Length: 287
Image 1 (cartoon, one colour):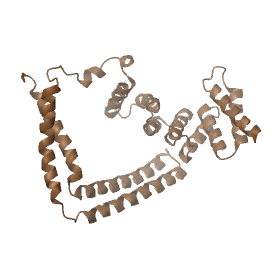
Image 2 (image 1 turned 120 degrees about the vertical axis):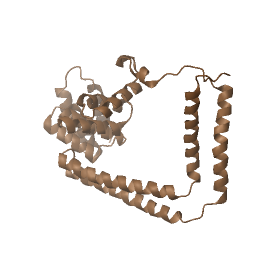
Image 3 (image 1 turned 135 degrees about the vertical axis):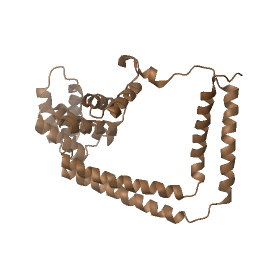
Image 4 (image 1 turned 45 degrees about the horizontal axis):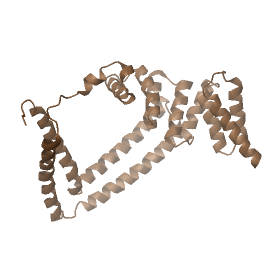
């Protein structure tokens, strides 16, 4: 096998093998690493508490939602601090001898085995396919995942690109990345203010992230959206769902029937709302 021209490839493979070995050795290291991780988590949760305060000052979230977020982050902060203290105590224990022997075996064995397998079965002579040229094609030729990567790169370089945030938020939603979708809508509102559509879209992402439950934060978004535009369909639908979940079926039916009365003939969401009304009325009739 000729190796001319393959030096960069083998350098990359060597680096990759080093990364793999490092990851494999991490569990065998003394628990001092866990102490560092615990301190990082504590610092992260403290930063999150400060960020909640800044969000309240900017008017992105309400005080009730902020208080709920503070309670949750504080709970995680206490848990992280307890874990950090346990790691500090464990760090004083002696490192067993078998760890060192296992570490040496892994450090030498993994790269050698990987190299042998690659030389036997690999194809180092094939041309590479760099990511950048593959992403440089027109947007309609890209799969959704690649399109997201392109937009994320642009937003990293241009974080004030409102159109980019509004484009990527519904894409995140379709991919099931609900928390990312909610964050993208929040960013859009920071840049250009809250609208009924943006608030309702963020509320929907929060509902999906909570497995269909209308959480306090989501309900606050829908109520704000309704105040800005009483005809906003997502806000009306999910507020009706909140009524139903809280045992107010009659209120939910009134809200949804009012939606249908004012709906355009071609409203895509109308069949789903009719099905929901029919199911609830059928259940009520049986009772």
